[in-house]
Image (cartoon, rainbow, N blue to C red; front, side, top):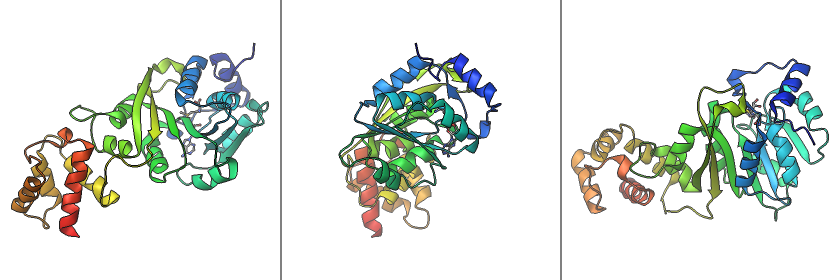
Length: 291
Ligand code: SAM
């Protein structure tokens, strides 16, 4: 039976051979459980024809499984010390390409054009570095990459916020930002024990499926996202009060009330009670007053 990279023994052996020391600042928590990887692979919906993109291959635990189950893996790794290690651990797999680059600076559109054909389904799969989960996901979403899904292991609390529905504790501007581009679902919670070293936080697997088009019409996306953030600026405050702070010097309280009345949204509600459709109506109404 083949000894996968994602086992405690093999991982320890690799770390020892290369005298590798974890960099906390790079969010290095490696997966040492093949079952969890199998779950990620299954939920990602990849098949032998799929192209896959990984962010942060580490020593190759997930990369190896992606190499086995998809047609090609392109992986971005920022830590140069891992490149010679990956060279050896993934030596048997010819369909893996490692790119030594910070994902936040990478031209992912170009990498996709160079490595995959236009008729291929493409899936992003990763055990993300937790210190930059949100910047990475927002970059991938905002760039509107031609990818079918994103399946990632992230901090449980962040996964809950991204997938949250109105009137829940986790619901906020991040829920709206993510769900504007994708259908988001937490597919599994994962215990700390499957990582080496173990992180301080709980983890979940989040699955994002790209939408063909946004679920609501907004006049201006940046304006929309900024206004949604303003409505959650102080969670305990009413919509009216958050909007009054946000539009200080621009709209008086009376004007704000009049605009809210005109769209039939009660200003004494809290931001957390509005769904995406209501936020779009709200943002468009204020946008049209200013333009
Ligand atoms: N995929 C491996 C696994 O599951 O065992 C490692 C996952 S570890 C949580 C995160 C990986 O992302 C590390 O290898 C780290 O060096 C890398 N990383 C951190 N910041 C990055 C960035 N900005 N761009 C690309 N890779 C990054």
